[in-house]
Amino acid sequence: MQKEIIISGFGGQGVLFAGQVIAYAAMDSGKEVTWIPSYGPEMRGGTANCTVVIADHEIGSPLVKNPPLVIALNLPSFDKYEPMMQTGGTLVVNQSMVDRGAKRDDINVVFVSANEIAEQIGDKKLTNMVTVGALLAALPEVTLETLEAALKAHLPARHQHLLPKNYEALRRGFESAKEQMAVAA
Image 1 (cartoon, rainbow, N blue to C red):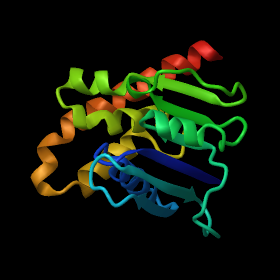
Image 2 (cartoon, helix red, strand yellow):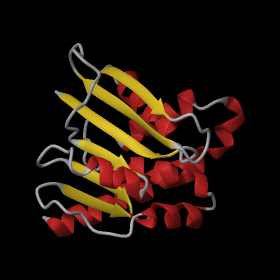
Image 3 (cartoon, helix red, strand yellow):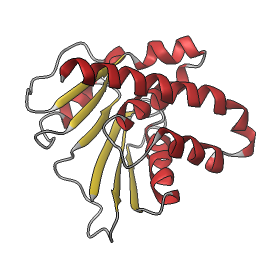
């Protein structure tokens, strides 16, 4: 088994942290993992993405050409990665930042109103965790419980008070994706 994930958005959306949490959850479960961040010179507002590869064997290359799993937190990321995806892959899209539907019909596209869900929970910074939760619906190798444990284990002590809201964001994203996948099936 090898799963390749790209997470992409604007700087400041928590793209790199989202990838780190997925990588930690897989690593803590005994999987082989690579995590590669990529971002522009701007701290906030520039582009940012990261690649996570999870495998149950040694990973030959951390580079991903045609990802089977993508989180697109904004329209430029959606435009960039939709054409690159593997047929049959799953693309999780932050519908709050994207004003069009998918062009391809050979991939599974899950639209999640991530900004709105995060704001309902009470913190717009949770948008990334909403989309990570949605991705987990298509990534059975990493469970909600494993990801929650990774957050608890790797979140700095000064941010531990944020765990309940992060857990809620993950669950709400997961449920939103599951509902869409059930309707599509």
